[in-house]
Length: 472
Image 1 (spheres, rainbow, N blue to C red):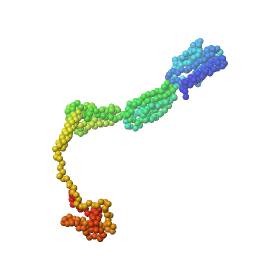
Image 2: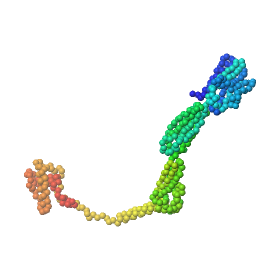
Image 3: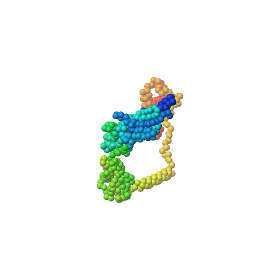
Image 4: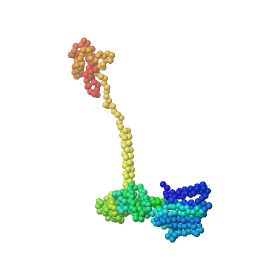
């Protein structure tokens, strides 16, 4: 929907176009008055009532005037006569005038508009010989709001519950103003309207939010929109979140050693409101002599000593809370640079010793290898030929077990033979050719030879004399 002033301008242009169309059709141009349908005036400011006059070439403007319609009737507020000039009633003489009076313009300016100026105004044009032509407009008085921001009744404390941050107020506006908050916080708005006795309305919009210290110093923006304002009215509001001290200790670099001079530790705190209390204490023992506390700094006025090692605490307080930070101090015998040099020297010495040891071992191994005697072969094992007769070739062998002879009989024969064999070796006698056992049809020589082979195959005729000698 177009704003009212744009709609009035389009209406005026439409009337002028219609007037020119009638002139072109009829050939006779009558007088034409064009005024806006509605005019919005701002309380206490000037308002322009525009009146365009179109007079044909065959007509003569005799007078243009403005009248105001009241409950008691119409009253004249301004008159322009090309021959006699301008006439304005006394009640309007100080705040009403013609902007540029002529036969084509009857626009007037009304200053210091008040509520009493609301109403209908008519622009009249008298021509000769047609007479009077007129058109009316409605004046509406707008009241521009008075805009301001009011801080919440409670302080914004980090970690607290939802709190009213601020309230944006558009006071005594006509019509009511549109008020809103612009913010990237996750808060919410509450709107309240209050009607005033003079016909205006006050609008209040509160912003509720759960405070957090991370947005300290950020800003909200109150935005007010109203027909009496040429553009949006914007007011920033800076957040003020209060929080307990956030402490950090600087000065101790971990390289404090006996005899080091001009050392100190400073307790720094970020807090809102600013800290009002600083305190240094030692937890493991009393503070040593030669140590001084100056505001938030712990000064060592002498070279460091071994007994300066310990746990030191910095306490900081503001109106919100008291916080502390502990620092454990270790006094070394040497500085970090000296310790590093000692480690490098020790490493170099150990490396040199290791190299010397390796060289010595290498030399000893070479000398020992050169002085070693040649190997002796006194323990050479002499292979003696076997005393038993080797078995016949595979082609001349008879079956392992003769037909009709049970395996138990073979084992018994072999055991008997082994016993006789041991006896012969002991007494030096010749082995017997016959043994008790099952009858056989073979000759004694064949039977003995076959029995030897069978016993040899079964492994029962092997008698081990010594593991370093041959066996029989």
